[in-house]
Amino acid sequence: MVNISLNRITLYEKKGQGNEVLLNDISLDVKAGEFITLTGPINSGKSRILRIVAGLTEPDSGNVLFNGKPLSEFSPKYENLAMVFRSQALYPHLTVRKNLEFGLKLANIPKSTINTRIAEIEDLLDIPNIMDLKPDALPISERQIVALARAFVKHPQVLILDEPISELDSQSKIKIQSIIKRFCINLQATVMYATHNPSEAMTLSNRIVCINKGIILQVGTNYELYNQPANESVARFIGYPEMNFVEFETVEENNHMTLNFINANYSVEVPPKLKNVLKHYTKAKIGIRAEHLKISGEESPYTVPMIVEMQEYAGSQSIIYVSREHQTLAVEVSMNKRYELGETVYVEPEQDEMHLFTKGKLVI
Image (cartoon, rainbow, N blue to C red):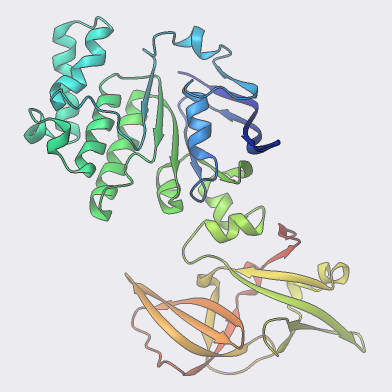
């Protein structure tokens, strides 16, 4: 089993008279046998990190070590490492079967072993009907599966996957995610995976690395990133719908403190959870997930009257979007609850589930 260490990786791109920082001092330890996913918006730096790990891009500073060794010593002929990138990079003149055989033959693996491995992967990914076709005869979704098959058939110690199932439909994605996870666990491979889809990251990973603009924002389990986001960027990116944010100012009169919403002309009493900490902040943001807001039947010191703008149905739950002036919130409700557009409802937070952010960073 292989652990991977990224040590202070920095990458620049020349722009006119100066340099644009593409990756900024990236350090990360991936444990042996771990499935770790890099997630963030498009062009956040995920693919660049994977290309550096794979030895395809040379960083301007820093290094990558595999069990304490550089790639040239750990796997000089790439025999211990396999990669899947969005471009697939299949050999267009070879059939699917020959694409899978090619690397194994170069590694001088016995023909009987090659046949056994190909039969195993053919069955695992359910691709017997396309084995004698060439890549150009396949839709892009099937070409992605073939690229996965070519990586799997190597039985690598390290697997690098960059958006490997981005072209699959939602049902196929669920099936292939399960296969990827199970195969990697059985192989005890160390996996570095990249996706701009946070749901995919939450499904597959032991740990998630949330990255944006070439900077690591947070590393942790899916529970930690969802429930204890380090900053506002992570809170907005991880989870659907994104975390609600309410910007406010505190006003204190006669030892009584209220929260004045900045985006709506409304005030509420300071929730008990925040009373002590808000003595140090006159302006901040409350963050709260949609499932931690509820529709109350009546007004209270902590409810906010808001107007229903839209109801989105999603499985056994639905999301209603409510607004008051320039403040919009997403509230998760049961599917059997129906609300009329324009209806006034009273929104109340679960106080123990509120987070406080200031200057973009989590306070509590």
